[in-house]
Image 1 (cartoon, rainbow, N blue to C red):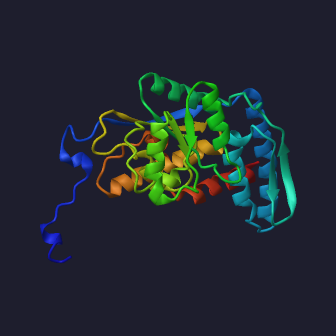
Image 2 (cartoon, helix red, strand yellow):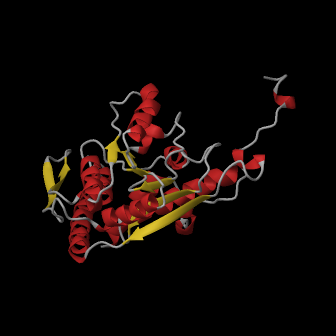
Image 3 (cartoon, rainbow, N blue to C red):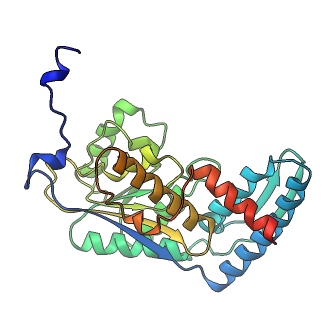
Length: 290
């Protein structure tokens, strides 16, 4: 390495000049909950904050992650009954009824559908990312919802081996698929998804590296269309805080590598600290303030 490094120049793709890559655009999509959804969320938040405050008073921090997970996931998973279970205590802290019927769109699903339909009308295929692909699997519902509206969709599962995913995608394209739904973890490395210039994040998760890699799967040499990446989050919820913190982390990552931050989440960038720690701190502060 000592002989190679002195005569080596490291370049980013954008440094190769105009015409190598198309336009790349990231957009934050704030979504309003329905009135009943909002009321239920706020009631759940108050109840969980009360339990969290009591737990912290007894120097028990095991509930923090439970509350954080519940507040992040509930708005996207409330199409079925939900319960918040605290394993350490063996207690169910909160239960909610389903907020939407099987064929009824949640506000974020409607927003995603709008983006997909507009893209499809322009001949643009879409990647839809969701982090809820295991216990709270939302992929089947998203696929059915898209297909009810005439959009052919496929779900890439973790069971598709890493070295087979590119072939899997090609097979779906040959079968006329317009949208691929998957967890961003499955495509963060090793895939050039040029066929999908529109990308929609239902959620981002906490991993900045995964987000940045998954967001640019189709922004590669050979891409002829402008790439559009959408990040959606419900206003006034833990999701918005999480997106704000992701925006901050991306800005820091880009700044330390000498780039000017260009993330669509940068407009939410107002805080310092790690994502999970900062989110937990904010939940704790809210709980202790009430």
